[in-house]
Image: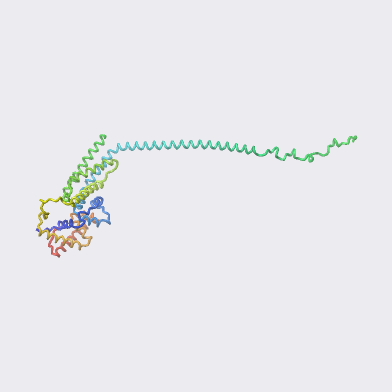
Length: 177
Length: 183
């Protein structure tokens, strides 16, 4: 009896075509093909390779039919993780407390450092003031004495100039006039 | 380990068992054992990989695409191993008779199949690629909706492409003297 099924004939042809059974696609591509989300620029190439491989065709069709069960499993696992999340919350809170304590410690340290720097600054400022006062005093001391260096009016003035007119007493003529 | 943890683990183990049972039924339904892989091995491997993934990350959401990818990867790995096994030479056995022809296929039919395959290949090659792809996907076993999703068109457009393409293919085969064909 002669085989009259085109599908059967084509599948046998496909297994004999070079690169047929060995031309396996990667898992991401097969999952994308199963969910109909293949990239536009690769559609023809993927379709051609799928059309040549009965095993991959079976796998893509299986994945398509398995998708609702996969979604149910994923939802159940996520829900289970959520139920365990209570314990996770405590761990998260503990971690947050530890972080906040650490931050507080650093802030305290920074405040202490700022106070210490302030004290040092004030101290240095005072020292600077004292030094300035001493320097001013020394400078003042080093300056020539105004009393002795200045042109003393009393001693420097010409006596003649201040000498009044002839003393009338001594120049007086004692002859009775 | 705490009581809530145990109860959640027991629930997840049950859910995973249900999923693997469903996978097993589909592996049987699609007869993946034809390709040299053992469905029981696939079920076992998928169960182990998924359980490890669940144990590894208990903090985040679990995605369906990840589950699908685990199944796809496991089957692909098994197909590759089957290919390697098939490529390895069989141990020589003097008692073993020579390779038998395919069961139920006589020499005349085998020669005739070869001619028809050649004719089919020639006729497919004459059809433009845009029309050829939906036909070959259909002949490989894809449904119209699956063809539409792979090729990136609507199911109705895929139906028209397949229907017209098959008519064209059969017509060409008929003209070449290969007679009538079913789908």
